[in-house]
Length: 327
Image: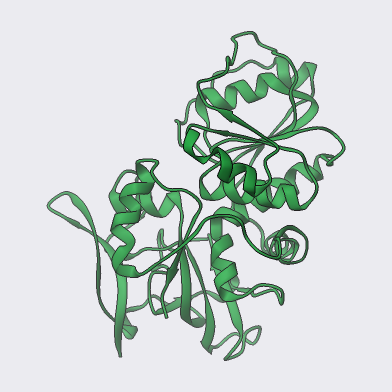
């Protein structure tokens, strides 16, 4: 049986992604075969498919680090035919054929049963981006962040992680400040629940080891100078969830925020998140964080539209979330 999938390959030293026919027998080994309904587009997917980042471990490979769908076959007793499930992270779309495919075969240890309050579509509106946002909030709350401590700032606010971070935080009752470079999206960020929007480049970051304390917590998708500034401006015993590197991988700061204010710099790894915590975060998304109706901009695309979105995403021209309709 053959079906369509979006596969990334290397041709004359160029990374090329295209929709092609795949035989089901060519899928990698795994205990669970999923009939995919939806996937999503994350910045990591765009880096992989455009060659802007060395993401995939081998080529050719079917892309897509997320998938939601229905169990078609399972040799693992934890999952039965007809169950709604999702997979994000692990090696999906990186070293193992991913979610941009009508059928996806994966190890059972990667599979999460879909929480009752989530649809297959909503699961991919959330996807890795939303899971990362939720995990950031959970990790900060484990370090004593509450909605009574003060403002939480979100950088890269119009992206997938940023947009859903604002929605989740707002739904939980936090006061949120959004930082963006896109002046045209101020109204959009307010609609997500940001009480304040700052335009990148319109405010001074300062150079002192400690600047005025502004934030009880921060979710940073940008890295580099922005992350360094956050270490200088987070309040005493506040936390920074570092989950992105859109502006670069270098971090120049001092130890003073950490030893004089007790600032927590939390690395957020959504890929290898332990399964117990992974399931807990997905249930918190479904039951506590997700609003009844998303205000995040949601764009639904087909496999044939992926390359266009990837190009726009790596050039900072996208807003919100992109769901890929597979089946």
